[in-house]
Length: 106
Image 1 (cartoon, rainbow, N blue to C red):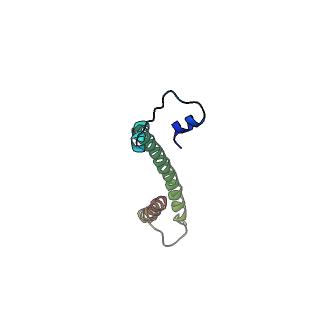
Image 2 (spheres, rainbow, N blue to C red; image 1 turned 180 degrees about the vertical axis):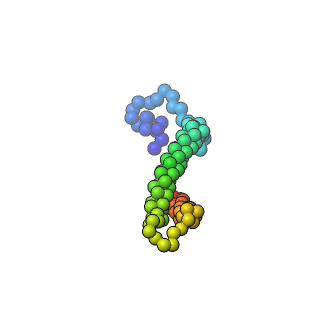
Image 3 (tube, helix red, strand yellow; image 1 turned 120 degrees about the vertical axis):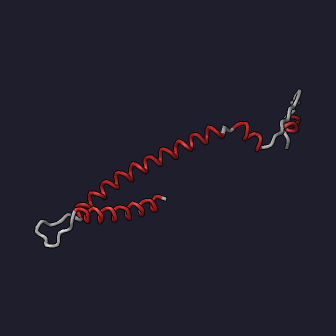
């Protein structure tokens, strides 16, 4: 039941009734500040991305230390690897780990 009819039934007749009509889309455009919301969203996304990159960097350092420890040579071993070979093995494993980590984060 419309508002003006409710007022008539309440035994108090209104002096004047103003009925405003507008589209919901128009009201949202007027009331919602899209630029402010977009800026806040972009800020949150940027903070999360930076935190994720920082964590990934810390994990990369930890993984690199683990890989060096795994490939550490026994001084008494007969088939010793050169430093360059060890670095190549570590870099290959680290690259593979980083690729998998990025895929996991997506």
